[in-house]
Length: 270
Image (cartoon, rainbow, N blue to C red; front, side, top):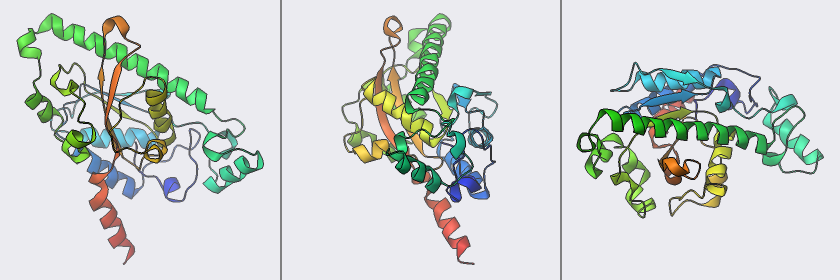
């Protein structure tokens, strides 16, 4: 998820119509996420085409040890949920609209906004695009490398994903054995809170994603903190590309933000 803007701080809905840049705190959060992910060998980077996501993606890649020059591709399918007439207004206004309509806030659609199903359809469309991309990447590798030089053993996968220890992978998802298999693509996606929450629901409800054992329903439905990191390992069969095996290693990871939060708290004292 992208970093904080002043609208986030003031609890004002941005959606798609308010294209705010990152705040100073947002850039510090993006810096922290970049350091956290600096050892990740990304093969592709995708970002929402809204400014706050663009700045977050660029900051993360700028900190990377392996792919500073990797092209960031911007995609409108990764935009935040559209909130129509509620955009640019306080979150309390949206809640009041939902209450007046006799609905719960997360599922309420203000005039001119997107329904949850419409957001999920965008997420589905983009994910299927990623699946096809990963399959093609695997095919290209098979054509240019031998199986011996291309395979990644368990220890090698850990060097690609050194941060999984922060997520407690062995404890939270000990049934997952896919990390010993070949990694054809390692994709960074930078998007927005409400959009990603709907994407996760799509993974769980439609694609039966395997979740960490300690993850609660409330955690699954909550919005990620700014620059929260989620890690999914997806196994694809080119004959059944739309029926992938998905394992969630961690969801909305935020340990990299501890120092940023402490710094912000200190600055407020002076």
